[in-house]
Length: 158
Figure 1 (cartoon, one colour):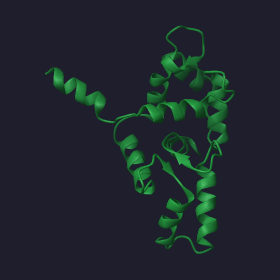
Figure 2: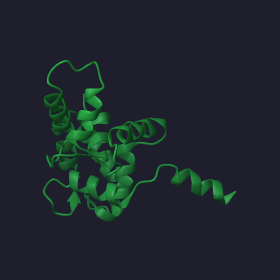
Figure 3: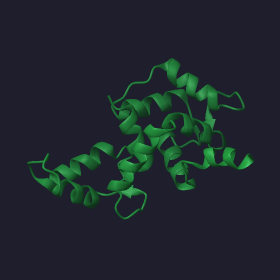
């Protein structure tokens, strides 16, 4: 009986790299904590909208020490709430893996180009389209798209 309980939690494996990348993305000022404002600003930056009440509820849920900010130790709970669970998260992760053809944990312009070349939806300059796609998803502007960036844009962009 105890085995089943452990398997449910391990169903979607979140790597240390994914957590670190997501934390860096949300910690806009780099001070080691995530505030309600930083959470809202990031969601706005990707084209979404989150009310102060929604952001406050997410932060409070993960804030173990009650100081109204999330540090790295508390972040696992916030990341879990942001990414969601079940079928939707599995679907988003599967789409990311399709695009991340070298399994590096990032989608590059070349990987995006490989997908676009084989797609009839794009009629213009395929290299230009690939560049545009990566730029839209590349929230931290490092030239590649991590899973946290992909997930946040997928779930929260309006």
